[in-house]
Length: 608
Image (tube, rainbow, N blue to C red):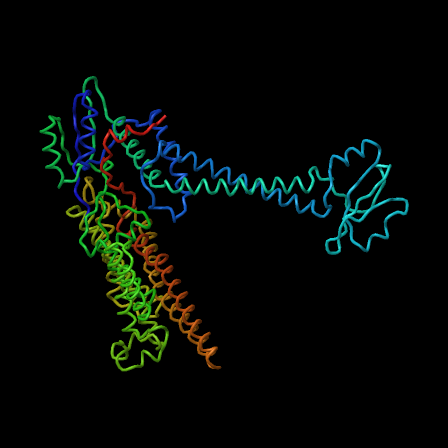
């Protein structure tokens, strides 16, 4: 559920601003709302420092994370971040320098060892020395009166030097600019740059070993930023200062007790729809399992919206089962989840329960449809065949129409539930009946989809549901203070727009066909890999090993593609199609109570 909030305003003497912020930060229960602009020079400087530390932290390899101590010897984390960035910049420059020198060495190597200064000296005395490249077969094109020397050969390419007292002599080959540095000089520079590169790299690794201190500094900077924003966001009127925020109802007693103790003046109000109320979610243990998905995509419902986790976790499990579609894959997921939880502590309890739900749902669907690793022979075994529902048997062509119909039923249930939830929120307003009408329209659209997609007969119930739904939408959607008759007339005027909404609802219901299509594709890919392995593994032990590898690779890829399809299609049906019918915009503000480190810890950082 979405926790109820109270809007609180705290009024204190301006001389007590620091004390009230310190107390609130220790309590950590009030989400502050600035009373005015919160930007100043110090805040901008802190943001720059945070950006600096974050940028340096992105350079730290994973192997260094979580190691070392948070203490820094005679240097703060900001200086450490600057050193890391400077070292990284120098390493980048050195890598580019080494690359350029290696390219230059490659160009010069063909001419051997020489001193460019001696060539320049000869040129001053009137002797022209020019460098050329040509193919061996073109040597016959050299004029007889020109002196040249072949320096080296590289494949069919010759490196030539021409000597002449005439700088204007025309030579029909590709002329190369005389290098400005000798080969020895280039190799010396290359050695120097490489040594500096490795030395700087070692120095950077030493800095990485202090990453814990870097993280600690980042956290302190974030605390300092929050503190300054809270301080700057307080309103002030002479000797009086005040702040505004939102506090969960279950924490109000603690806040009132502290207000009495500190002698604050406090105003408590119910938030209005215009207030930027933050959202705090509290879920039952089973509904909390969908939180990892919501956290992954980074969406928060608004304070006035619904807690959709209970609805979404049920339908997401159903979507997952139909999209993966194979009980064998469900078993693999179940074993993998158990093993991961047993040997790796990093997976959360919610994530573990979610994967257990998804695994069991997939196994159940695979059992009733007879899908086990895409092998029909498994479904024909006594134990497995007894679990199959004949009308859903995946290897019977007639079952496809039934599965499509189930997809439409699932869609109609979820979308109509969305409208009924919306009606519950609006009740006792008359517009709640309009949402009920939309629920009826959804089921009328279900029968229409059966007609257009499955060639089923459009029965009288479907027509009646559409008719009743349209009448209810026209009659109640625009009802307000103008009276029932005017509300009805406004509903008639809005009918063309609602017709477009109805077409969109039809499209939303048809979208649930993706559950059937992707599930069918998963099955066919599994069958195809099984066939490849069977054909490959019939010629001896070596081919049998190849067949096993094909099965492992093929089913792993198929399971991975199925998981990707879940995030593309399963999440979409909840977050887009269903949410649109729930009128959820996903524009909520996450509840972030004001909570920082102690001021003494903050003052230990140099923010200059």
